[in-house]
Image (cartoon, rainbow over all chains, first blue to last red; front, side):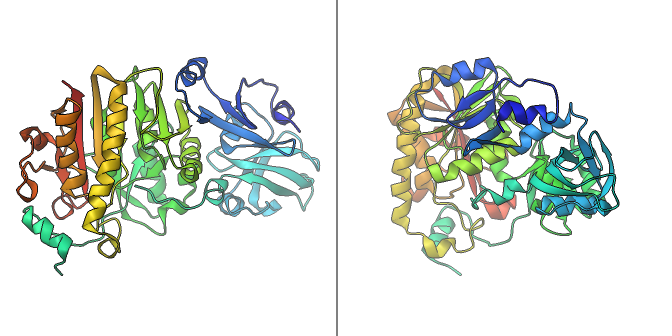
Length: 154
Length: 288
């Protein structure tokens, strides 16, 4: 799945991006112009949206936040569900308080907490309208901590 | 317990009382108001109290567990940032028209603080292994106006000049933020570090606008890395020290019997035993 296909799973919008190697960024044109005057290796510009790994697009939590503002493909979870999901666990029926959009197995859903804040996304592994509805964790915001080796804060 | 370092502090008119500084966060006003965050965290057993000398800084007075384990941290509603380390960006105080150079950026606390107000921030970091932390923190805090450059501030040669520059220089640190500090340091380290600090200043000063402002800061209490570097910048780079509105003692113009330019007294030195923060040094410089 590429960048555009991934977005289309959640919303009918287009997001203009700037690419550095295999990484996608949301950056204003003026910022891109500025970067050309720096004469150095640019690692990131603007907001990181995700990256391609082995021809597969891996979204960032920041992209999911953007999509959550316009998408109907959402699942709302209780506080226990939020914590479990942020620790990388899958969601069970008892965690889910409501959902909008599709409910069939294989659908991608944005996962929202009690404040309608995005905490990641998942894939329906057991239909949501069944007694045993489940969502497999595809990415959660706990990734911010897991993907980084500790660096001392100053 | 007196050692060769504490003896130096006593000679400078201070002491080296050791204490655990208070945990502090900086609220991210781009994502949430302080009032809303205080209310949310209160329900989870956390109590925040405004730091009087900071714009968006709050001490964590009561905590049920580590504040970094909260979902609000992952949402980028706050950055865990010690109180004194929030001062350099506050002193630089960019406007929404400023393109700011942050010359030593990782892990991104001051970078994301600057980006709240600035038009854009150029975040320069020389160590590649520190880039992921920088990029992650920028994403978590939701900043869209930062460019991250993996390059050395000593050799960085952009085609543009900046009217605001932050040099939060790599330094020897201090005994408050590192409880093994005394065992790790040698006094010769300070002069070695100072050479790197001078090289950074020397290069980035070339890219400061005529009426621009450069904030030089360290979390070191050693005059070799602080007032003596500023004194060198006055004499060798033709810079001047500007007045700042900031807590702390005035800079020391005669450390260990050396007579420095009196302008260094305009710098601010945060002695931990007085400010109850980690040690810090801040100077605002301009071109003559």
